[in-house]
Image 1 (tube, rainbow, N blue to C red):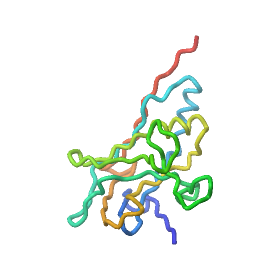
Image 2 (cartoon, helix red, strand yellow):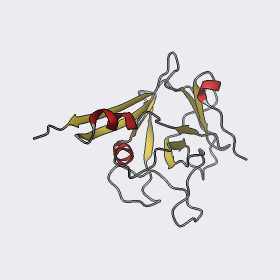
Image 3 (cartoon, rainbow, N blue to C red):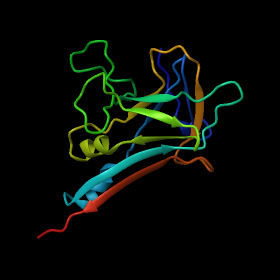
Image 4 (cartoon, rainbow, N blue to C red):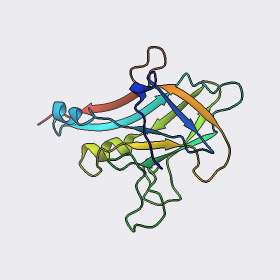
Length: 173
């Protein structure tokens, strides 16, 4: 079964927990406004999503790594183009599609954060090469460890997500 709950209906908080399949879908509904504002005269230098101020409770710890899976418009994880059982992972920046090169993000124990590089992902959306349907962040779907963490969404009063895009505006000649 598949159910979704908007973070706005959950005190502006999101939860990811391994072992039971709780994961979070990220969408960027205003991403294309960058292209509308800048036209075609820009280059994306770097893009990242920073998830900070994680809470994991007394029993659980955040997972060492989290993975990004491409989402369908309905929020479910997309399958590869051959319609096999392989889940469509978001690739590391600069790699060719392969299930063995997923975008893997490690937990920073010192800063209590995950920083997810999104340069290629954002660039592909802005160039029209990828649909803007979001991605699903999850623990390893094949693992049985019960790691857990929660974090705020963009409207949380104290634990806001940070979505940063660094770009260069090109001069027309």
